[in-house]
Length: 106
Image (cartoon, rainbow, N blue to C red; front, side):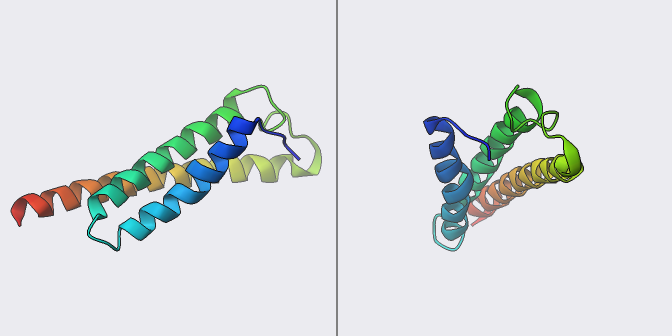
């Protein structure tokens, strides 16, 4: 179990858990552009948070601090999670650009 600060818990619940769902919901409304931007920003923010805690910080959530049989699993899930978050950022930015272009052409 990794303990976060109060800020960390709030950040995880709001930015990493809730905002992508809000962004997805907005993509099915007239506020598609805002949804795409929110998706990109929440995914980028998730990436920065996860990269800091999993690879840079000296906490129990750093991949170098997990030893034993779970080390490899933790390392690979941290890497895959970072790639998914970067992918979500790219998808959000591409959607934002596509929606912005379609609004200009309309």
